[in-house]
Length: 368
Ligand code: DAH
Image (cartoon, rainbow, N blue to C red):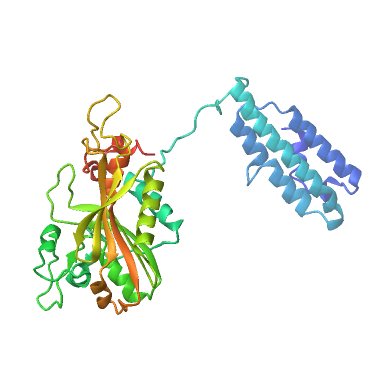
């Protein structure tokens, strides 16, 4: 061991050093020694110089710096700092030299790729939710969410669907087992529309909300049906909302979602909670509304119809306001219910709704 290393075991007093020049000489000596050190094994070098407990830097800090009187300490501090940098630099260049193939011992190749952890991504359904939410945010809607377990009152009655109404046939769902004395049956909501009621119960007009969420029906699974699927409900109620606001809003949404060149149209329809009710169509975005594919055959997306049915909507039926203490003479509004799975399938050319629920990474990875 070099004499200078032994000196780090002693205090300045023990070394008999009392002037700045002597401090300077000791540090010069140690820097020189460091310079001349041939690093064999990196770990040995690190332990000798930089280990927390017994490294040279620690010894200098304890024996030279801490043990010295304040007047001497201010000479030592900056020099110790410089030495620390020199040690760090040497360690670093050691690693670089190893990469270049010099030196011996363990080889560290910094050019090798590190451990790559795959980062997940949002499910396509979630991505479509976010895209649609973004479009409605831009025109002043906000998001509310509600329970997936509902009472028949919110899922049906307050939406103007009394018991034995034929519409209930299309919305058969799952009922929960309840204790005998339960006051009301509980079911899995068949649509996001119950949140129209819950929102209006809580809030006076103006209301402008969308409700993304999961819904359930007792449907047998096939390429277009699933017992669980996704919707976004929309509701706007105020004192002066007209059919024009309604069509303008829907058109804005569809053009944002499918592109500005699509055309839109309404067809009369029926929902118990809207009057008038419409079914909303978009000109087929895949064949440009011609019904013919690029090759001249029938467009496979719209099956030659040139239009694609998108979702149901309408002006809120005044009867619904009666359930939430809104004055039907003073307020008006519109509502819509968008099937997310269907929209995602259309936009991304997916022909089987089941792939959304199978979670096969080969499918999921196509939508990073
Ligand atoms: N709740 C309807 C369903 O699931 C969809 C719907 C139609 C919602 C018209 C609406 C609406 O808000 O106005 O079939």
